[in-house]
Length: 157
Image 1 (cartoon, rainbow, N blue to C red):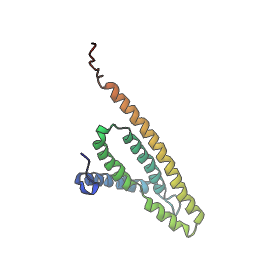
Image 2: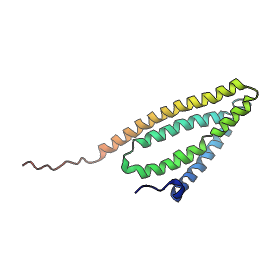
Image 3: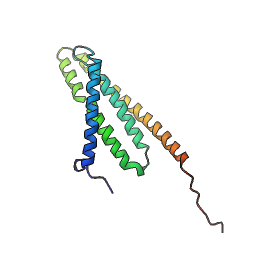
Image 4: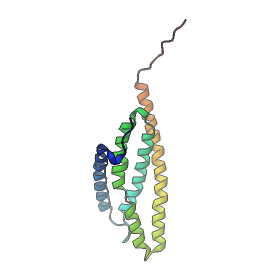
């Protein structure tokens, strides 16, 4: 049976909510700990968005290796970590706000900051996806080795 759309699934909404709380707390702690990169750009925003791209790529890659029978469990994990945590952890709006506020005085550096974040973020998402695919494939191979082999009982006649 197919899962209901997320806006009709109270369990899915709750999973996103829990992940979102954790993601926003993690982002707040990290951005506060790292402080400003310059007077206009925060290290926290840069690190959060780049690490978020890497982690989300990993999550997507790993889930892609799971067999279809685990699809519902994978959906739950994705709602918590992919949609909830990563959605609240990363902050495209702060990237745009920092770039726009810097553009009035430093147009070139504002554009470079935004472009650097987007291009490197895309590259890191790809690296994360490849890593997730490798880890997921290895995990699935280990699980397959532990399962007892099923031999078909063919009729020799």
